[in-house]
Amino acid sequence: MGIPLSPRPAQVIDLEIMRQRQRARRRLIRLAPELDSLEMVYRLASSPDTLYGMPLLAWGLREDGEVVGLVPWMEALTPCHRLDDPEHGSFVGYRDPETEELFESAPEHKVLELEHAAAYFDYEDTSETTLIQQLPETQGTHALCMDEGDAPWQLKQVFGWRLYNDGSVEALLADERLVDSTPILPGDACLYPGHSRHRVVYFFQRRIANRIRREDPATLEALALMVMPDDETGPPSG
Image (cartoon, rainbow, N blue to C red; front, side, top):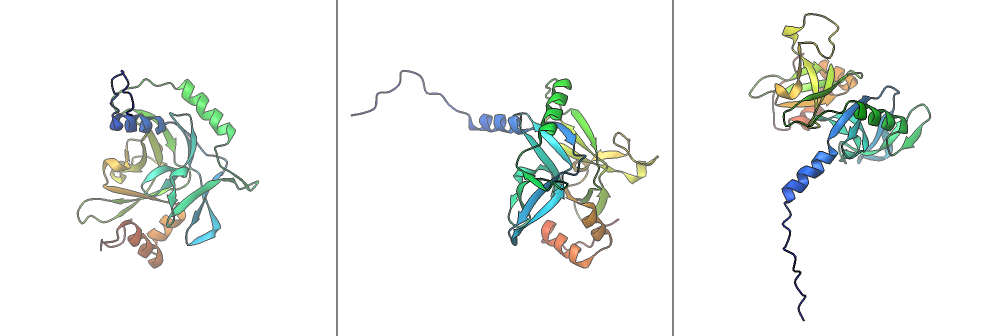
């Protein structure tokens, strides 16, 4: 015996529209710097019994209300929970190095800070790309910039971060030709968003950036294997 058909017309579901709505709910709408040395904890498949720590740069409030820790990782300022790569790192949780407490979600004081700030700075939606917020860089993060053709690598200091209304976050780099005062601060005319000029931008902590600058052979070899496995370009320019 067949199943009776519903008298209601069939509803067509546009999967692409659903994906866009899901992405919109996950977009960042507000940032808060991490100023109390809280860390992201991760592990590598090569040493599963060892936990590694990395300082958090900031916390981000998403449109769906979730607050996530953020670190400069590979090519983006990345939510920690997205780190799920056995070779480069899998997210375990957050850690307070002072108390050695390990926790899975953002601390309440950061959640409240971001929620109140987002309610106060309630921006109108617009189809045009709009700057929402700027954060200073506090950890000495550097960017390895690669361009088209045979242009050499460039190792540049990151001076800040910009959050746009579409949820994207861009690192601010300096055009040395336009620097007219120091120290360089977010808002200076010499700064530009990294991906507006460079094909690829990879982020590194200050410790690794200094090894690259000194042209440490082991570091350069690992770097070449990670970011440009088929490229024979020389070491980065200063």
